[in-house]
Length: 75
Image 1: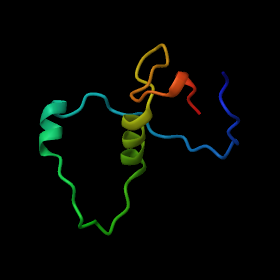
Image 2 (image 1 turned 90 degrees about the vertical axis):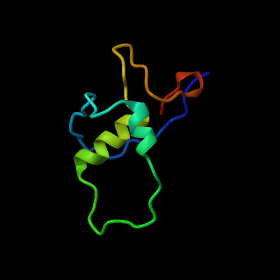
Image 3 (image 1 turned 30 degrees about the vertical axis):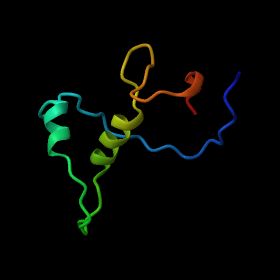
Image 4 (image 1 turned 30 degrees about the horizontal axis):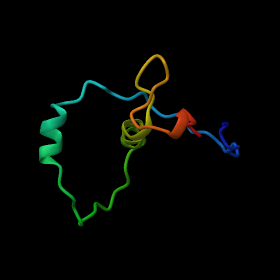
């Protein structure tokens, strides 16, 4: 099985992320709430970088990520 071809687009260099989070995962999840009132300002590139890493970032020297991929065929 092989991965499908993904077109190459322009890349954006993202800032390094912080894995020294302020608080435990349990505490962060306990405080988490959905909000329907949005700020008028945009997210910073640092915030976007941290969010993307948390969702799909490489978290080990072997290349493993925070989310699974069928057959490890990450696009």
